[in-house]
Image (tube, rainbow, N blue to C red; front, side):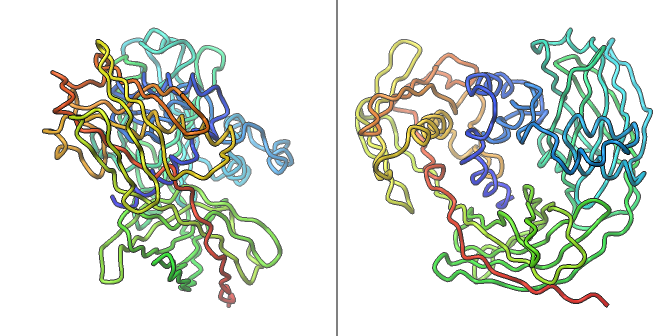
Length: 476
């Protein structure tokens, strides 16, 4: 799961600033969602990025542009009725597949505890599986606020957070007459594809309303066309390299498979975009980790990422990679009022000036060192937001119980959130207040038995690496 951790670190650096709703509402949804039996959809003890994505789903928004692009508009006039829901969710792949009659229409409906769920369509194109459906207004009798819909579900026969289908899952919700339309999009989690298969789905609860809504969804697609490339680019200064292995093309999308080698365990070399010899720009979604290993030259990872559909008549692609560097968490026991924490890899630090317990709150006053001078107001606000999640308090006797593959403090033995106040912009001085009596708490809290953990990774922006061009093999 090394690649998963690396991607979370990279994505977290920019996710919060990209969400196009008031951050106070997003943060509130995160803190509420963390304590629900819900998975991304189910937010249960995922890393911060997962909470952010889920908060967006709970609020009924999409973490992406909110308009229908011009290309989609051109085809809507001839789009079959089933394509209407894809228009609602700005899913151009779904619209194109509907035009090709490549979407499976479903009519599976179940009612449990007064709540009816109906699944309406499914498609499997390239590396993406989409399922759309409808849940009726009775879902509002659950514990969520009106307009919020969250599903606790699993795919196949997995349970809880170990379900690989949840790893890249996104949720879109839209209020309609008598209920809500929804779309789940998942990254296909396996290395090899099955052209025809059945995907079992079990919904355990919706908005806290328990029930076992079980469905078996047919997913199918024709065999992808494969373009084998196998070209490598090295980056000696960063002690890394990337190999473009192959591009798979389906009806409406393509997928890129590439391998990276990094010196540091949780570093992440990823592709930001590509441009072909005709000037077309190709965008890439979040990668799906396929396999990894530690070898003599570093940490190897093979990933697959959905991309803009590849034009068939091009001869070359220029790739624009980036490096997201990771930094191990540093820690200090709160047995003294002032101390300094320093980044392991970078010239960054956190100077703690004072630690004070005020009733059921712990207040830590500190300033950041090593940041660039003349930071913009926007950048300072992003840093302030990130500080709410990258400083943890953990009972020192439970540090070893933190799962490195799904890092989160043990229940009742850690506090992963705090409220941050900016004290002085010029000196980057802040104050963090931890709620000692909140949902996430430390039983029998004592400062001298509590470890403060800081992750400096979010302060290190992703580095642009030198672009490189690969020549595509000629088709026979």
